Image (cartoon, rainbow, N blue to C red; front, side, top):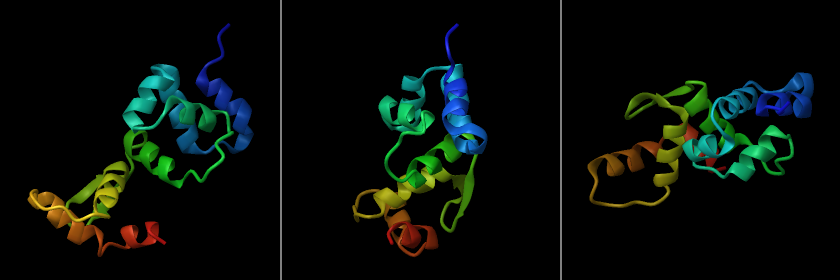
Length: 123
């Protein structure tokens, strides 16, 4: 019998499996690691390491993406209102560099650079 990603995650993490890892494993069980990785804009290898509790780096960034895409995590953006956590993360990444040509991008550059979430992430 084939072991599912959810079974693998539960075995690797034990009783202390974080809810977002469980959601990640469930999504991989329902589709595939490659498809989930593509949705998260990450590699399948990273997803595998997370499920197997072998990811060597901090998981804050990927946890935000999982919460936004798979757990309906939202934040209140001062400029756009309620939006998924992963969209906030994407806007924060874009706000590191100023680019003209797109009014929304300019507005978000200004809004993100004043936002506590942006300032906290850059510390």
